[in-house]
Image (tube, rainbow, N blue to C red; front, top):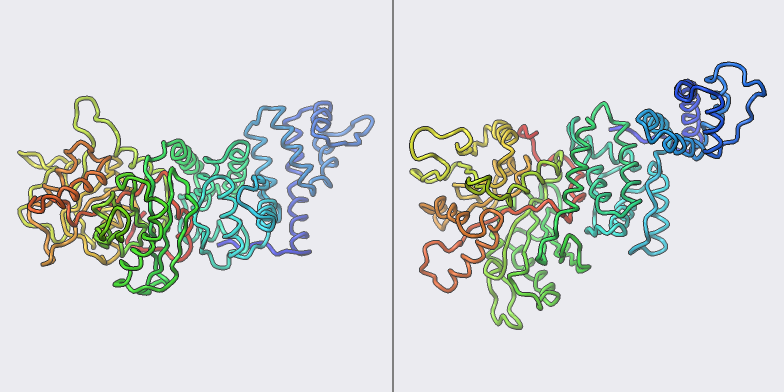
Length: 559
């Protein structure tokens, strides 16, 4: 982790020394590009820079330019006017960008400031804090204040996110140090720092010129890290952010419940719940900071959902999606069996799983080298039409301890050995790196069906966590029966879900329909009871920064 530069006189001395050392090479490169004193004088005039040239303009052009800038190099406003004029004159060639980035990257120099954004939801004090941060991204900032102003920036740009605890990066003294800190905690050398990925999504949703200016600032920070972060990676993340911003908003309203540990390694959780539609929070957010043991969470979650019900009681339940944002160890919680409280047109409590689609999402996906490019690419495959006359995209099977003996493997050809692309994956806890490698090489895998009963509180790391980290956005499994075993024939019956009209893209709705049918015809064999759906839509994530701080969520060789 890099350390932020000191403030006060010591910082000024370091900054001045760096600019003095940079100026000769800058003047030589500028002279090589401009070629003549007449052209240099014309361009400086267009940049509003007045220079007293010698009458005979004798001597090399590089020496003339050095004398012109040996003092001006300490004025960032003058230098930025010069770079702007060069870009206009030469149509933004790479050499001008390199000069600008070289100047911005000098120790003690401030990057090009982030743009000032519209006030939006900010009051006067918040606006002053935000302007101070955006005007000087390297200024020392208390972590709590940084959380608030970044939330304010996101809100005013139209990406409404949870205000409480956007970041958890201890001792982050500045934005630059924060990027380095989060990078060191979460990103291998070849990954884009998660904070920059978040800002890419912010820029994709912002209106011009704010979005363009945000990207300029991102490029400036990225230029300092060219030895560690390939430019192609940032381009891929930028393309993914643009695609996510352009994706049509889902037609439903979401009731989202988040559960997270109060303390790392602890056994108590705090809850929050809110509503959002079309990627935007509807302004209704409830927080329960009581430390709940696992056995008390269903009742506490039901209370929060009940407090949100008046805001959505005018909706058809089928247009209300229930999402549960859960940490690794809680992905198997039976959330579909928790109840909606009775009232109004629903006189008695009813399991949530029979009232609307219920999905779980991974709260911890973001913690370890988060990349939206893989996640988005796999997600888009869920809704792809069949290729030619071929079958539609199908699920892939993940076998593990507890898979019933003799179960038919729907992916296996009827005769002969299985094709490599049809061979089921194996959830072997001792070989997770091999599983991660196979998932990484199979870009066609977007949905996994587990053939073994997934425990309520799995031991992590496990195979499902491995798949989630590799960008697999969807999975289907069932919880064990009363005897702890997997129901016989369940893999085949779960596979039948895909054969219904909704296909892979309609799994949450298909499972809902099966549960509702089961309520009317309890004798039906395949009622969807116990089926869980991971459905992690990357188009919008309300906790995009929340989980970036803290130690890695796992080891296990995940890439």
